[in-house]
Amino acid sequence: MDVKRINLALQGGGAHGAFSWGVLDRLLDEPGIEIRGISGTSAGALNGAALAAGLSCGPGKRGREAARQNLAYVWSQVAQVSDNSMVRWLYSMFPVPRAWQRLTELFSPIAWLESLTRVFSPYDSGPFYSNPLESILCGMPHPHLGREEGPAFFVTATNVRTGLVRVFGGAEVTVQTILASACLPELFRAVEIDDPATGRREAYWDGGYSGNPALFPLYRPDLPRDIVIVNINPMLRDAIPKTPAEIQDRVNEISFNASLLAELRAINFVKRLFAEDRLTGRPMKNVLLHSIMDEELMNSLSASTKLIPQPGLLQQLHDAGVQAADRFLASDAACIGERDSYDLSQIFGRR
Image: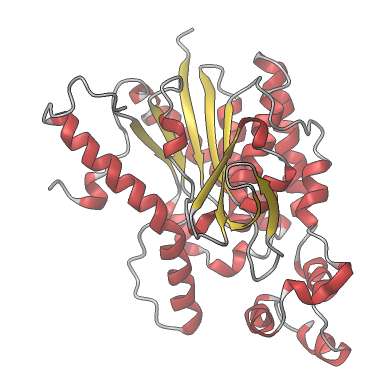
């Protein structure tokens, strides 16, 4: 069988990451696809951790089944942080008066979460603070991270002090680095990790601010040319946002797509240089880009659903991911190793 080797770039986007879960489920079911590299941010780092830890358990069906078990476990646990359980967790994080609790329970948590996080900080919870993602990661059926076996795995976080992207790879990938990548500062305390490069303890926030996801770690010479980006943040929205919620949602999407668009623009420039034979003999990798997305579905959702992991929505996103991966395999898998199937000219034009 002709095996096609790929790298995966997994975007972050809260509960919308269940779409990537469905994509990964379908790719793991395809024996002709081999995943050699993974770069993930936030929810993409969570998915990547489950995938990489599972695949490190062994070759063939053994590793693939372990990865599927990890992914199913992670999202079954995330599904429990929904509606009232999310409200209870947030109340445990923030010192909200009981009368206000009773009032806010009448509404969706998103209706008051933004206002609440402008008044209270995750640091206000004192010794009662906990990050619910930590127990989920530690409870995976196959929890081993940072192994040499399996695909290369890279996790993106944002250094709070410098504002620069920080990519963790190899043995650096731990539960703490995954938590750092998924650390929305309005909800979670910054994750502090010792950095031997700087000789100090650095604090990190969500990687989506600086790389969603970072593509450059996948340029390594020993990794395949093909990068499959699993998009969960819409690039295009035809309708002009008019309500405060719509405006904030679009600002959120643009902000968390900015770093990816910058990398895609750089790749597009390099591709033009290759097409003009201006990089002959230079150690530059001409990567091949592919994308799995469902713009119609993601345009029907909003930023609020990223924070409300309702089981029904997660299942809908998972199933949509399976179908999107199916379409990719049917229409674009033949391009792997040969040419791009993601046309950057649609984004940046042909000039």
